[in-house]
Length: 579
Image (cartoon, rainbow, N blue to C red; front, side, top):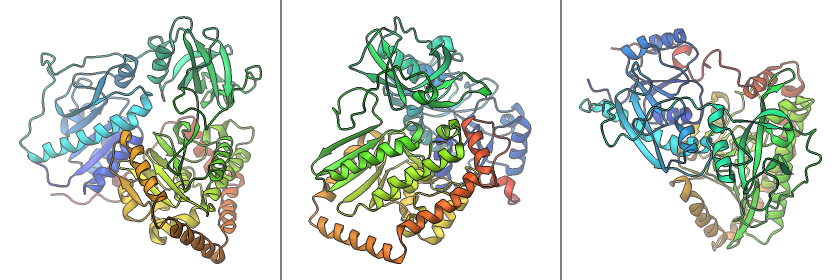
């Protein structure tokens, strides 16, 4: 039977990751009733299905099989990050490692065999030379959104018949691939060229990392960057730059941005900037300065880059997973101050391609001798960046979000005069999921000013993701740019140059200066920060340990014990009666 135009959808997922959030947002905006259940165990899954009674179960991100009695009695759609016929738990890993020119996403119906069910929809895309995580957040997520909508439309039509998997079909190019083991992507530093070393690390980013050895300790490697000028004895560590370490290959070198020690003295390790994880071992390595105004074409580790064109300055900051430590914030502030010293009319703040910013660097905080002190240092450092942007009164600023943003990263973007985002970007403008953290970055000034008091309260209390389009509808951001990831920056450049060369440019700057003066007279900017930090001090140093517990669980990836009620609609109120 065909489904109604709007249906009840249960997202069954290992975690509420970027793909799950994108689907949740789009399906809810399409008018469907959507609830989420974390895949914790079979009994909880069965209970969720019984409570919610969904029309369709969608599994965007699972690490184990759906219970047999669930898929037998409910239509369950599995989102597999592979081309038609690809099967196995390491689909995207193998695609990156094998340098596949094209890959895809398949929406299939769950059955007794992993990834072998009838196919409802599929979408292919060209591969980039990028980390697995980046491909997942862009190409895979975009394709997954397409195939889920297609599958639902086909189910709703009542006339479409899903396609059985047939390896005799010439269009079926995939095959079964086993779990990728550490041996499969082990780097042989004495023979692997740079391109192969990069591909191996990228195939394991952000999990599980490439198991290797640094300074005689077992560690997982992440966040690899090519280096086109340095070199040395293959396998030797030859330089350090801020958080990264440079390691020679047979034909050049790679920068390793992050590592996770296999074991710490008191338990398992967690991901940290490589130079932070081995801070006591790197003194002998020569420091290589970061030249953020250097050659754009150079291949090297560069978290911050600045360039100019047609009276516009572009300040790009690519911080791994969008996390910004106190040191990174301080470097970003110096770079922004440099941009302010330049004869440009507009400064465009470009975050990384995967994340604009996600606020404080919780892993670096967890590694500190005093996490409370490092938290305080970090929030003040990011506040300093926000203040510098807000108080730039002699020119205009644009925050351009080509990747997702969360927590303090959203509010840092709001400090700019104009905020634009690529269609498909997901925002999480709230802090409370991190142990009821209050937050700063002048959000009590910026958020109500843009979205109004009612929306500000809803956004911060509901703890839910929102789409860039809905953010624009409520005034949180100014504009959504309809483009894919590759065409977003050219679109931003066109917009920024239009602003810089507008006949009304000087009048706009005068109005901005007058508005800031009025706001300061009504309530000094410093008072917003003082009030926010008073609450943050309680989060960091007060009697309630919720923030520290939540941060620990996040850093060490402690498995979920339940689905939070703001996601699990079926657990927070009685399910409406159904026909």
